[in-house]
Length: 494
Image (cartoon, rainbow, N blue to C red; front, top):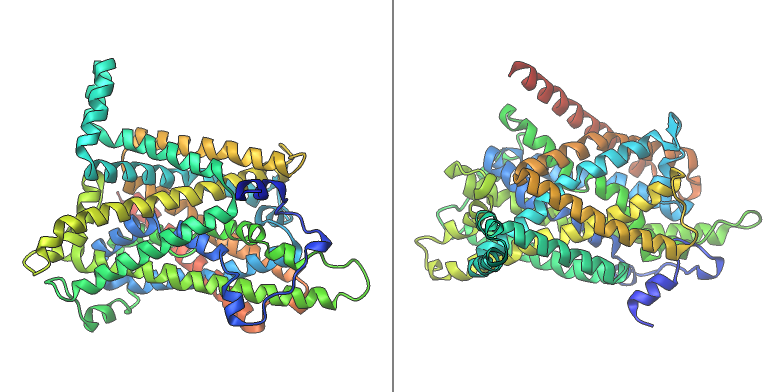
């Protein structure tokens, strides 16, 4: 039986008593079971880093380095509590949120707010599709002309249209490719592909930052130290709020993480809690797999933080001094200049052509994998939403898998339409980032409420971890509240 058949034959969301397994006892064994966090990292190291993070660095210089680090670290405590709830209660995030008190319309109010946020983030997916199209056109301009010419031979007006919008064709081809990949495999394939791509993108970007030190854009400890004055420049508040919503574990990734933990098998291994009698074995398994899940979350945090900081430093060190901002039709050429500009006048100048190709391939990898993972997560959560809202309940796991595939076709198509309509990647990314930023305090607050109400004290967070989760909630709320206030004030003044 091949991988796809195994994924479809086994209900990954069920917790049969005979599927329980003891957690690995050694660090090496636990590292061998990480995976969900790397899937999340694949979604994180995408438009937020390539566009919003570099754009923030280009606008604010090193000043907001503290915000980037803060954004990457602080949300992980909420991520871990959501994962703990899924392992110990066997519930997906939306099923857990459906138990929140308050107004209901089939589903809980927070589930409906999640739906609004998820639909808003399709703008980010649209930006990914458009930018992948732009990167492909930059890499293969002759192929773009050939495709436009072939279309023009059939419908002349269409040919002229696509000659002025070459990226439309590549964006459509990318959408088709991502959809086909989503339809062809399950969690195991997704984890394998994304792990490889995350590693490649992270190494390439860190190497680019290291090379800066031998160019005219080199920076020292004084510049890095200036990023820890905890300043928040008024002119960068809007972009900072968007970056806070996207960088690190964003609202979408927080909600999605328990789904990946469940599909990895963590909750199945813990098993259902016995209804009566001695449950000490269950407590031991729950503690053991929670430790594995925590390790998974922190390993992924280290990976995406390194990548995020590297992207930010490239924007701050290269684009900011030149007054360049990646936006509009010049977004990718400006982003490419982060890698090519520092090589001018150095012994590495002859490598510019190869570096340009490497950048375009890297940009494609960054955006494509995020499109791939984000759509996979949104499709799963949408089917779950239909279930908790009572709109449609799958008869069995096979029906759920089929519905996931339907959404895996619908969402990329909607996002492509958004890019065609707007054709402004930075604006699309900011719209999705703001939606996630607004949702973050609600997710963090709901997570704390549910954990305190429902999690068995024997497998609950330690006092220190609980305090840090509260700190994360308060910090997220404070940043979101200030940013909303400042944005509203600036709108009234204009």
